[in-house]
Image: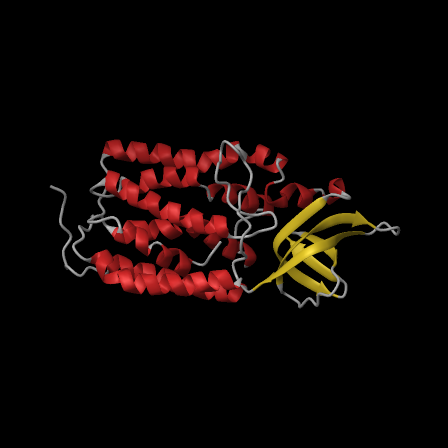
Length: 307
């Protein structure tokens, strides 16, 4: 997924086109699909999550949570905390649309987004560009320039919609929407595992994939000689010619899972891609700060109530 700064800035043209509607909700929607999963993955890597947050939980439950369908439920719940739910819901959904379009452009050996969830539980990706390719660097620079150009127009003559406590009726609706959002990934868990979503089936039982194509994404290098990567609690030996790994380097790999004559298992790598996660974290933090600024910025210094 692209960083948050790119997601927010790329949503500026959509925000400009919305006439008098409050653009803050659109910008919030542009990163909302990532907020829960990003926080959870960060805590997972730091070993700070409770025991039930296993590798499968992260790669099945949270991944299906990152879908247009679940975001629709969350947008419905969030919009009921405002004075004008219909307008806020529409702005949040436009933000989600911008988000998933950018995610769809990104290449991943097994990844992407479950765009048709829960009807189809598999990842979809155009496979055009890696996040850290030159294209996305250009997209980041271009998006920031567009955001700066449109900034004044985006916030001029807008009606800012207040947050408010929901009524009892809205509270009941919020409860059922949130319950549905939390329960759907549980109900579809077995089907997602059966479909080998995010390679969870391969990681749990690699021997079942002998001589089959496999893929791992954003795995950590734990040894260079031999070349070994870790995904969750599982480790995999790689055979990758003309590649010099570094310890703690993040890599995505695609290849055939094989067994040699000595009985050792390994991935015969066809493609490999390294990732610079530090830059992505930095840009996402910058995006979070930008969203805070967007949220408190009000050139009119007033928030008209609904009439």
